[in-house]
Image (cartoon, rainbow, N blue to C red; front, side):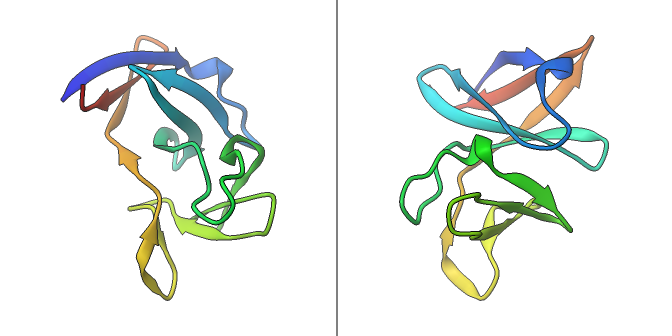
Length: 102
């Protein structure tokens, strides 16, 4: 895996996601638990842009049909098959860094 600078922390809204492209991957960043987490940018339901979504009570919520995914691992409650891709991320010097497979 390779680590890439994705965005400034200040660019990530507090009330919704920020879609970025990292090494050809569409990724959405959300502020979670004082940090920033990275997920695949598209909802698996009808491929809605998750950057229009928000985080509520430990879940990333898609704005189109309110599908929810755990902020911890991208899993959908009650469904062992559907989940968001997750990417390791960290913050350093005001930047969000995301690891992706080349």
